[in-house]
Amino acid sequence: MNDLNSRQRKLVFAAGIIILLIPIIILGAPASQDVNVTDTTISGGILAQKRHQYDLGETTLGDVDPSSAAMNLVLLGLRGPAAGLLHMKAIDYQEKKDWAKLRATVDSIIRLQPHYVQIWKFQGWNLAFNVSREWDRVADRYYWVKEGIKFLQRGTNRNATITILFHDVGDFIARKMGISDEKKFFRQFFVEDPDPAYEINGVPGPDTDINPDGKDSYLVAKDWFSIANEKDELYGMTGMTHVLFRQAPAKAQINYAEARQKDGFFDEQNRQAWEQGYTDWLAYGKEIFYGLNDYKYMLECTDAELAALAEENGITVDLQRDVWSRNQNMVHYRYWRDFAECERDPITLAAHKAFYDAKVAYSEGRISDSVDAEGNTIISDAQRLLEEAMVKWKAIIDHEKYGELMIDNESYIDECMLIVYYWETVHKYNVKTPPQDFVLRELWEANQIRRPDIEKQFLIETMRVRNNSL
Image (cartoon, rainbow, N blue to C red; front, side, top):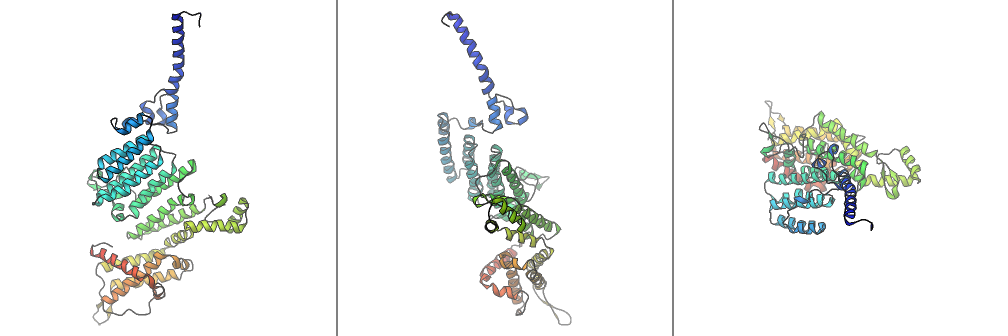
């Protein structure tokens, strides 16, 4: 190099720079817009393609407000503190009920840390469960519930390998539409959104962002739970006990059948829904799980399968049985299996229907006895249907397969107790003394400790009657 003159050295340096630029361009060329659209049209440098392939890229930092204090921290390489600052701002906006700024701030947070799972979980929960409570109108609450669900859905798009996020989407839908205080409205809104923007030819339709096929909320939750289970098989799962995590699709199916029944459907479609729930639960019971000391077990297990698993685990059959029994009890496996099996039986369906019809008769005022032309008393429709329901429930109690279930199933006991309470009330209305000998007398007398709760439930239901709804 010392033998070269100045001009030659400059040419050598220039050639070296050009040669070094070639791998830099190949490796570090920025991604084109097509990278964020589809895997089949990826262009850009090798590193850009790998970032897209493994979802490691941070391509949204430019969307953060460039004049904000958070951006100043980002420029200094302090992305974590920047996100923390935005969290504090989000909480402040929430307390001030500045919903527009809250939403914009939350969007900035996920642009800074799109792969930080807890942000998606926390802010999704915050929008769906906390912010929604700040509104008075049920339709407004539902809007923010949807925002929380949509937010979490965006999290699954950015974190396709994080199994628990897919489960959480289903959990949010199942909880808010199925067990919240506003469940009666939310479950209807899920298929008939109150926002006029989702009307189809003047008929309310679902928000297709969360319910594209217009299905019941429990079935949509089941779809998300099923996807989560598939992700679990591919990528594994953290954040929840595995045996509880895997039961979610089957449990959603059972909840769907139960909710549909409470809506007054007792047709073959509803029986098939219970049949599917029972089938799904048995399939869940046949999955292999790992318990204490990584011992394999199945929840639905014959004696032969129990012995085979004990041999595979290298433990005694008694220890295998203990592992099996402990985990069965933890997830209440036998209860839900027997419950679904009983509910799919037409005899149980008929018992539920008889009581539902009796409550309809009560709500419609068909509770007065009448007298025929010969002076004979004709009991009211409500009393007749209530006594029919009692007979059907007594048949379930005496059934060789379902009798034991009746001992532990509080919902069954409460329904039978409520039938008797309605029946006594109808007698009092007609100024009659209820006979001492009736078919559910033994169950009624054995569960008098439940009577205050039954009276409360009766008052709630009859209050709904005044509002023309059961």
